[in-house]
Amino acid sequence: MRKLLVAGNWKLNGSIAMTADLISEIIEGLPNEKNFDVAIFPPFVYLPLANTSVGNAIKYGGQTVSEHESGAYTGEISAAMLKELGCQMVLVGHSERRSYYKESSANIAKKFQAALKHGLTPVLCCGETLEQRESGVTEKVVADQINAVIELVGIEGFANAVIAYEPVWAIGTGKTASSEQAQEVHAFIRSLLSLKSDTIAHLVPILYGGSVKGSNAKELFSMQDIDGGLIGGASLTSEDFLAICQQADVLSS
Ligand code: PEP
Image (cartoon, rainbow, N blue to C red; front, side, top):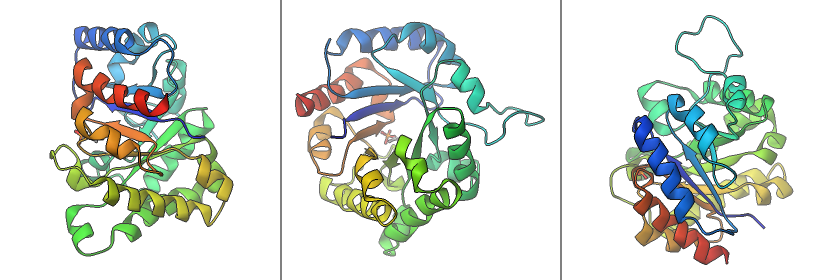
């Protein structure tokens, strides 16, 4: 049985004070015993604070990682460095990294590989733009993004990984894919993985991301192939984030 995962991507937001407050409010607001997972992805500089304050209730990780081990790569952070800070997970291939920083699927596959090598769970983000959806190539786009990783690390690489399907047109726009639209792509992703391994396909958590909030989380997370959410805007206040966690709790109890 896959556990639901509610993961918050803070993007370029926060401060030391906000990180400390948000983490303690989330911990306080989560049920003492829960049957779902929670993760946060603060900016790199707040990871040491996450390391000393999250305890066992929340997992945490970076929003991206270098594909390199070390060397002359100014501004980069390696998977070993994240691991040293106690990170368990890392986002790779977020659409903002793909579009603003021109990360290719080949780069992203190397980041995924670097994460695995250092014992981090990569959260591979994939998803189509509005233009791609309207021209009917959603499945091809998502398949290409996932296949680039399979080509490098094999299907076995997904035995300890998470996929986040995030239609670009739904990120930060207030537009959510309907639960049926999301389920359709999630089922496609699982069928794509099952071409290589049925076992791994059924094991991999597939999160939905794109304007998830307390009011739509339950409907989305109840779909057969949706195993939680990657949350942007609504992960920045404890009230909004906990409202989503509460829906995950209801579905997991
Ligand atoms: C995201 O960027 O991963 C995201 C899903 O953002 P939002 O929830 O704000 O749409």
